[in-house]
Amino acid sequence: MDNPGEHLRIDPLRIGVASTRAISAQRPGLVVFSGGSAANSLVDVFEHVRHLNDFTLSYVIPISDNGGSSSEIIRVFGGPGIGDVRSRLVRLIPDDSPEKTAIKGLFNHRLAKDYREAREGWSSILEGSHVLWRGVSTPKKELVRSLLNHFNLEVIKRTRPTSKFDFSGASIGNLFLTGARLFTGSFEAAIYLLSSVCAVPDHISVLPALNTNFANHIAAGLADGTVVIGQNDISHPSAPSNAVPLPATLAMWTEHADAVEDANLPGSHPALRRPAIEFSKQGEEELPAQIEKIWYINPYGQEIRLPANPRVLDSVAGCKAVIYSIGSLFTSIIPSLILSGVGDHIADPSIRTKVLILNGCIDRETGPSTEPYTALDMIGAIAAACAGSRGSCRPEEMDYSTYVTHLIYVESSLSPVVDKTRLNELGIDVLRVYGIKTDRYGGRYDPKALMQTLEAIIGRADKRLDRSRRNTLDA
Image (cartoon, rainbow, N blue to C red):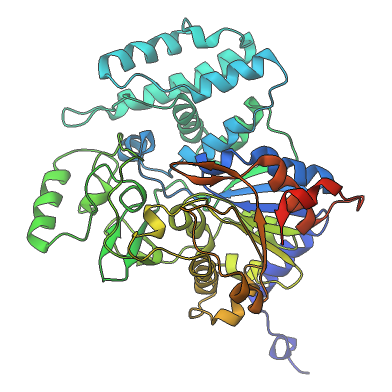
């Protein structure tokens, strides 16, 4: 008798893809790839599109940020960069009651930049006497306080003569989320708890691109061969751009850093250990050349490949539409796309709508000003990231529409160049939206115009169209 196993070949990857498609097919969804602050301005737009179609709504957010108050949490405790996840969860708090408004104020609050003032403010929050607690019900207050106190206990346990936690500018929401992660031992459990406290609606999910309790960092390769280590140095460094140091310099940095007892492994790359609590998004120095590639690295700066959070794959599989939101292309969008499994799911032909909402201006990541990225270049970067996650080479331009089917943009003197004719030749529909012009950011999207444009692309459940749309977009 033949062995059935000789005729049955099982591909684990295909089984995984099939199972996630079956799960998501139960209810169509809208998946938004984004970072934190920039896309927060479009949350109401995405909710409008979701509501029209009775979709689920999933935000996929990277956890590679190693700047701001997250950098101090990572230094002392390790773990993922949680700032953007916290930012989105707090932004999603409904404004329909005084208590929810108070909770939003609490989790958005940052301690003073002066260390002594920060410690005093932190103590009053722990004790429950701070004015931020006004309006928060007693049961919810005691739940939040207990996890903040748990975080504080962990800080005390990790205090050493060479290292103490710096509360300067710390986000209370970040401290709560870290306390919940340390208490439960699960990042996703911590997100669930914060979602519950924030009363985030059940039809909305905030998904970390990686489900992990460890820090995961990225590096950027530039066209001139320079390698920039760490998201903070790629996007908005607190010091000049960090290229890979010479061996002698690297050895000196490593020896100095290893003398400090913290969560970093001995020999970790110094760029990943440098304090980055303060940085400025204004007056940023340009990178010396265009970014060509983003990849994940281990603590020693070596490239690694990582699988995406299974829940991210579940959300993408069989969804109705994918949106690449505004924000930092190479640190907010692409870190989620290069993870194994993501490109395969986005390439699924059953997902017919894949929209890139173009930024209103060129930023540090899409420069330099002497050779800025065009809209086609940005689409190519997304396509290359998705193809790379599948183990494939950079696709030809004719294959870009596998990953991006529509481009939405606002036109200004600062916005990326859009070659509508060429994009149409590649099978990518281009829609111009009339926005609000600003001196610094070029064009800002008018929420109503963007809502109507996305409605025109994705549709709506009842198929009724708003005639005013013709005044807000130009196909």
